[in-house]
Length: 251
Image (cartoon, rainbow, N blue to C red; front, side, top):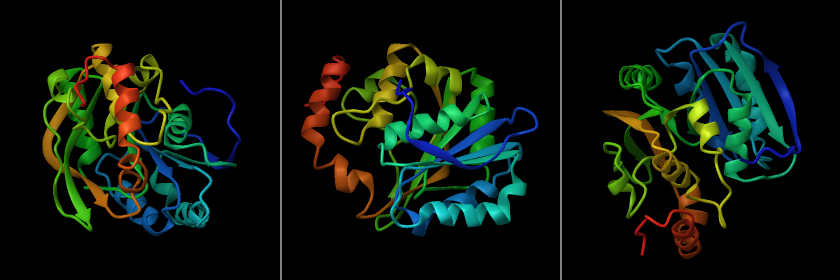
């Protein structure tokens, strides 16, 4: 786990008075134009006992200030709020690990700043996780933005992971499962951090529960990480992932 001291500062924090049911962690990097829509969708959740943690990974577009203004108007909706800013860009794995470390709840919902949720997303994931006694839960995705449609989420299976990832990072995860897996790992290039985490879950026999409902919204756009970094670096990532998880069949 990337636990070495980070060059970061806590911009503002209101600790929860008691342990929240779920900590929602948002990672932000140069998505000032999308972050309010993401935060509005979190504030609209039917699950009320939420902590909100936002980690700004040294954005250069004023995104951190947008979050500060939004919190001025909306912080009272949450059991607690924390806004952390990295002093330099550390990458998505580090940003997510920073957010998990700041999470006060036993369960953490992960979402990137350009995505959004339908109101029942966290409540339904929590109920599914409780019913199954699993390490986490995820739903089907709705693609929106430049391309529309449905994601590829399906029931948790090692065999389904062999050729590709089909479970997005937007999921509810037990914090102790994240810790047991060593958190998110920085790979040779940005991208596939969530795939690597799920592979570690598989290897540790940590199971996630699929909620077959369209409750999470994944934005497709030219500036997304998959378009700008992951796809151009696919060869290096395939090699790295194959060495880390030899049971994969990515070639």
